[in-house]
Length: 67
Image (cartoon, rainbow, N blue to C red; front, side):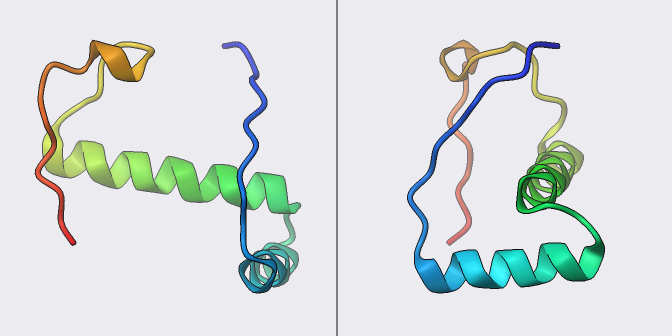
């Protein structure tokens, strides 16, 4: 598995809270984000089935968004 970099824009207050939670959990902010992403994907796949492929262009369906 290749490791890729990904930049995001994030509000300073949210970033501070992320650091707080990560520190509480004994993780770096980067590791905490990876945990959150993995949890999100796991939940999605439990509800919608496995995701196949490596890029967003390989999806052949439109997800039912929950707002």
